[in-house]
Image (cartoon, rainbow, N blue to C red):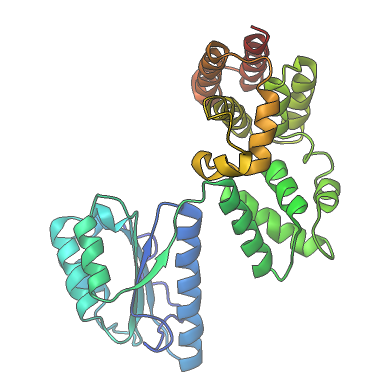
Length: 337
């Protein structure tokens, strides 16, 4: 089913302004959605400049039936062109995939087509054919590593005309978590509500305690064996709106960090291990300090406790807060041996 049919908006761009076919590749949902929005905005701006207008059609690749693309990209009775957004093109059927490829080889002059593709093995032939046809490309790779998240924050603040120092970026990650939508929103809010370079002090003041009470601080205190402090941070984090899912994710990262750093060669420096472990050197040094008192068996049991809490938080349990308290208590007990 079309999400938006025949929306009369100014969206007909000249081919010189917006590529007739744009391929948006990647699994990072927030970045994919933003790329689609940016393309649509550019098409509208170009259409406004030319005084033309047209329709916007937004549909899933799995819903694209035989001949439908030709219908959506054909000249409108009301004049002007159109924007056609085909999402998750890797799910398109064989006939629809063929039509997308043929269209990319000979696109209409007054139509903009945006095609999103996860970039994996599914629909790989379609992806290769669209690239070969010369479709413009936007890459939306997952943002997983710590350094990549810092780069994302820098880019978001630069987009808003602002800057932050390294301490401010780290504090923002601690305060908000790893969700890109939330991080982007936080950057926008900080840019609008603060002045000067965004530092750790600015972030801490802005979030009024949330920067000190996050899933990461809860996890740090737990793996360090500080039960009372970890539970106190947990209650404060929950009270200030930190999602239980983010907290259990931080606990999982904390315990995984123990396992990864603990099994790494001890003779190598943090800088030498950073690339292999996908962790910044300062984090490796921190985990090495936290490893005191841990055994491989204790780390394995802590992993199981976090997995159980994850299931409870995501629907199997009646109380997410209780599940997190139990996980923290078990993690501390595992460290104590």
